[in-house]
Length: 309
Image (cartoon, rainbow, N blue to C red; front, side, top):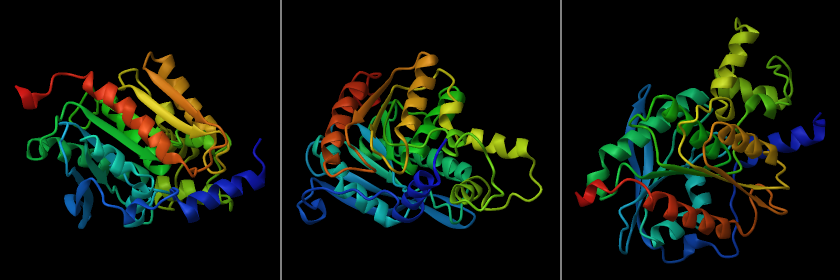
């Protein structure tokens, strides 16, 4: 059973800090190997424009693309993209020739988790529809994210697989320290009427804070739909999960649950455990490079590029 102290530490990280990457040097101040195109509208929801930034390599392109879910604590402001810059995400991937689409799926202050999932799926479809414009292969998309962004990336992958390979499916998924089972994350007991911060997190993420009139079954059903580890079908693309064993915000167990669920269905799932890694860690750019190595292999091994036909 989790202590109040451990739950509080995790929630403070989720609600206040989000995901803040650190590195020994700040790549925001360095010459970047990309051209950044900001606030490209890819969809609209309730009259609100949904935007992404596109990072186009300034050097040779490799014809491949990564969809990066820019979300921390289920908030998707520009600071999340800057966090990913500090992790050297765009330097590393664009330096290898990838075009990166940093999708902002909206924030929990306005949207539920399932609505953010829909926004992310629409973002993936937008990338595929504009693949020729950016000279990338729509059949070999990689999908990544960290923390809340990792959660939404996992959710989009299993949802796309459940739909039988729709236009929002991807070819490979690599994520950092994602929540994957919200019921287990809450300690296995769902009480959204309580005053604990975890109750508020789940109320907001699942229901925009409004649970009056909902039955326990309806609440559990929604949280199950928001838990990618509980939705694995066996048709998912290969996964790589990277997680620190000293994470005070999202327990390592969350990645282990996802790996177990995928492997039980026969899906390739690798888990890299960072010794002493928190949420995140100082040298996370090293693991970003490992992730890029993994995508190099997984995406190049996919179907022949339509661009060469």
